[in-house]
Image (cartoon, rainbow, N blue to C red; front, side, top):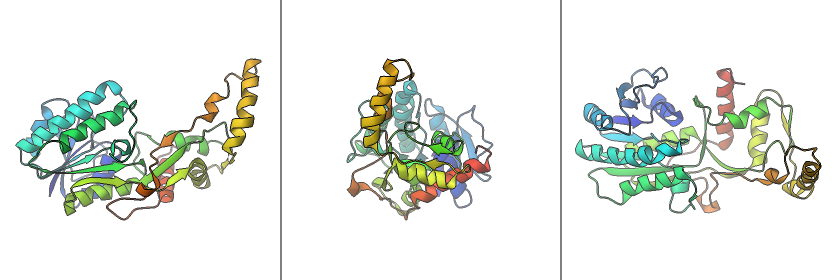
Length: 307
């Protein structure tokens, strides 16, 4: 099968290309200014972007049977409409014109119909809009859409998860309020790559969750601490103690000028991909453990000299 991959130089793209390079006829869509040094041998590189006619030219030149659409603007909100929505519309048109048989689209968990989306998240809303182009129109190609939660694994050259690991590797003890009481749903990047390959080979149309178990902050940080260099100890301070003791104490210290900040920020509870219990641990392929996702991420950071 001939496959064209957009977003090929990103975290998931590099893991996918590494897995597919020896098995498929794979082409990577790469922006003209982007480095191709990390693209595996055997992968054809074709220049183009999601935001202009070079995308259609790349599809025409490679004549793929399938397109894996990973490319997206994830941080620059001003680019999300033109890249995530407009780029998908260009891809849909090019795929229809040049005989593509399947499009595999990587979405985000907050865009799944059974998961509440954040109306204030420009990224989530751009993915919802992009999916409407795939599911609410008739196409001559089949469509598969994947919804991963919080992804960990090697080849994270953009350091998307580094800020979670670095404080643990550089401290001997980590206690609130040095971290907040976040919650997570973690999947291994191999689960996402395997699910993409399953959609390509098995003709798995429609929507597919890629979710792990819902995890507490203590489970995630404790696992990283046990594996990371430095021997950090994560102290599990109950949220109630922070709410009723640490916060009021910091508020008092702030009012008298001792603390530079009040205590409200220490009650923040971030949510990184959690889903309802019935939606956990789902994927179209056999999954890796969330522990291996974390430990292999730490191992990779250490192997490239970041820890």
